[in-house]
Image (cartoon, rainbow over all chains, first blue to last red; front, side, top):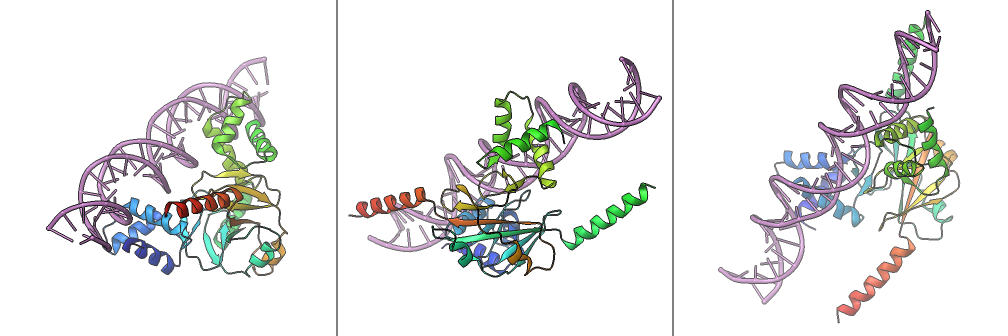
Length: 132
Length: 132
DNA sequence: ATTAGAATTAGAATAATTCTAAAAATTAAT
DNA sequence: ATTAATTTTTAGAATTATTCTAATTCTAAT
């Protein structure tokens, strides 16, 4: 594993958020390492193929990268916000229903986050007022 | 709902595969409807927001669209192939662990498909041979 | 030190999607 | 039916994310 790959893996493992390739690139530049975007992409692909990181793709957003410690994601259907949540491991339940070996699974749970719920409530209220 | 939206929804609901926006556009053209790509994208966004279709994003691939009948997906980690699989509904199990209401969930199970397994076996064999 | 192979680079190229502003179609009001 | 208002569609430009390319730099073994 190259130095850059190690740095990138470290950033992903230490981050609490779900970074995009772009964000990782910027973080590396901040830490005054000179690195090209292509290198970030290269290494991310590499790390992903080796199963050292995972990719989470939320529609309308660039791919995001995450550590491989088992956890699931809550996705707000309004604003696209991603939050971590650790639910009971489902591997056994799933594997019992599938004959081929499961490598891993990605579970995204769609909901509406509090901010958007609040927003919705306010909007609705305003509409109601307007219609009088 | 506009005529185009209806057509697009129909195509998605009737398709057994997981179509991209591009593929939907081409299908519509085949059925000699004149339609612009932008219209396909517009309507897909619309249908998605209304919860009438779902989007499945597999890394390295353009977004794909699917019907909302509950089912899960098997994703081959080597070639990216997507297959449908209907596993036991997990909503109750998940909801019991989450306080906010779940709208829906997307479950992608990573595995290696038969073709890729075969491929791997062959490659390995060749490597072995070569190394002599 | 020399060299082969791998990693990195900057920038071009590509692919998917969104934006824009005008045109066409649909709907509602007269 | 005619006009006006609104919605949908359109073609093409613009943007964004990502990959490709070919040259350069680094690394590690001789």
